[in-house]
Amino acid sequence: MIFEMTTQVRVSNIREGQKWYETLLNRKPDFIPHEGFAEWELIPGCWLQVAEGIPTEGNGPLRLGTTNIEAEKDRLLEVLEMDDFEIYSRPEVPVKWGTFTDPWGNRLGFFEYLDKSEEQERVKMIIGKGVEGNENQIKDRI
View 1: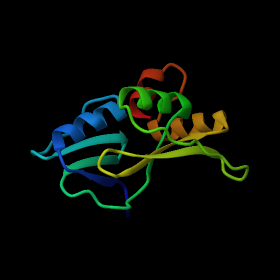
View 2: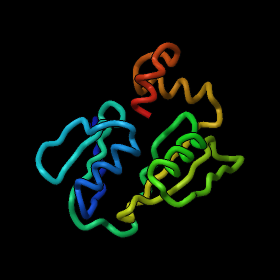
View 3: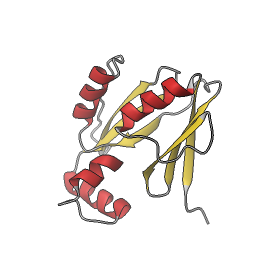
């Protein structure tokens, strides 16, 4: 039985990497088990690990769900001074998405549900609470 997951990206400098991912995720790590390693629980049972080491070329992308892809893109372009990236959509795909890289070459991205009622149901299922009245918790997690 599979019940949790982790994914790991590597950065050549953990201090810079942790700071970059804190900005990306809008929060400090949930767990720092030892030097050279930081972890964020993105949603219950789903962990992103940032480890100091040699970045893996060509990995990913790890795409993170967001309720407003344009706003997240604008925020990152401003606060992380990263390169612009395209946002795509196709009629047969229920989300729009975009891909970017961190300074170490790890491929990341965002996606946003086009059907907002489907999005609310997904958030409710994952977080276990209704969307209304829980905006801060939801913003902290997605």
